[in-house]
Length: 275
Image 1 (cartoon, one colour):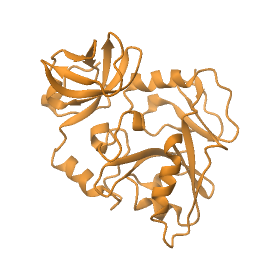
Image 2 (image 1 turned 45 degrees about the vertical axis):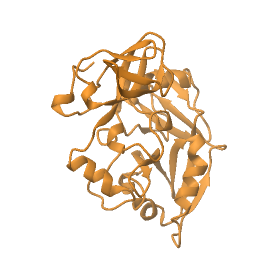
Image 3 (image 1 turned 30 degrees about the horizontal axis):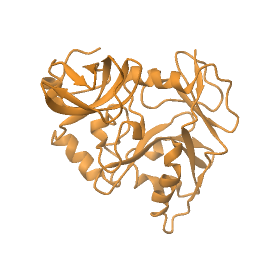
């Protein structure tokens, strides 16, 4: 029943009486759904609908805590701060003061923890100034999230280029289709309702040396994608949908086999056997 501290995660505080309304017009999911005991997964997009950052929103008293990439916390605060105008909102980077922890595999939830909003199998998250006792490492958590096929922010998505639906944000409860307008909504909705997706982030089994991020993926000599994050024999690659037809995929000196998790939804013509 592992519990791990995640040092690569940071914490951005959004406080003030307008915090929900302020974020509601900016991020991809319904901020009002973040209440004590229930977190919300969401992303900040460019006005053109391209990914900038993603985070888990946790309600704590009169503030929202954004469990985000530590390396992106300052950028996220700066980007959000541009839209503050007259909103009664204060933004603070608390990454040096608070710790993010994750538990999975039946690990008991400590006080203040919330279920991971993406998948039940992902376990729980805790943002706290007093971290729990850990019996696993961040590397163990990384192996767990790869086994589930969960993308990991900037390791798997490209800022100002990636689309949310390419990264599974629809299936992973990272988008609200009913809350109304937010920055980048138009492209996100058009991608969904017009069936415009041409590629996806796909979990893969790796046979051979783990390719470096950015290594091209080849099918029959043609480039069909690239490697993103990985550990050991598991990874995530961005692949064109037509590459999911059972052909051998080569990446560097390794062979990749798509390993679709049960949560992922693809067009019927693009879906190989699930693993």
